[in-house]
Amino acid sequence: PIPGEPVLVAPRNGLVVTSRRPAFSWMPVEGATGYTIQVRRVEPRGDRPMRFQVENVTEWTLPDTEDELTPGAEYAWTVAPSAGRPTREQRFHVIDANGQTELDGYIEQVSDMGLDPESDGLFLTAMILRDMDLFYDAAHALDLVEEAGDMSAELYLLRGEILNMPG
Image (tube, rainbow, N blue to C red; front, top):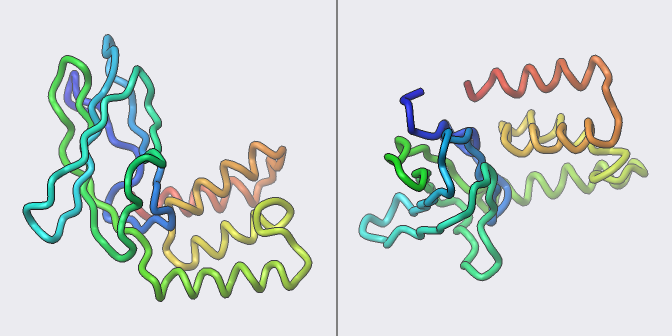
């Protein structure tokens, strides 16, 4: 990392995210009192970037007061500390309609098995997300599984596999 520049954590490396209001995270910069986050749609060129001032946090979600991100679109984002230079751009995509339909079908199958995709079926949901190359969301799902108390070897093996895929 470059001194005084935050390190972007997620989303990055061209990953696909399912949320139209994704959570952005980065590593802090020593002495920063706040950050400026910039998010822009890559195409069409000329779209004005959205800029947000946030306090001294390292995770931020696109607020409900802003328009949702466009399904299928590619976005780029940067973070700049209060008194520093912005990061290099990282890009990500928002899942398109076909991918969302496919994901919804798999999640419905989890429900049909009598599991709740957001609680007792969350580990299975993480595996589905991984298989669809939705690594950002799979990692988030595993965070929730771990918070619920699952500390199994399978969880850590899957986490390592997911973290290894996007680099």
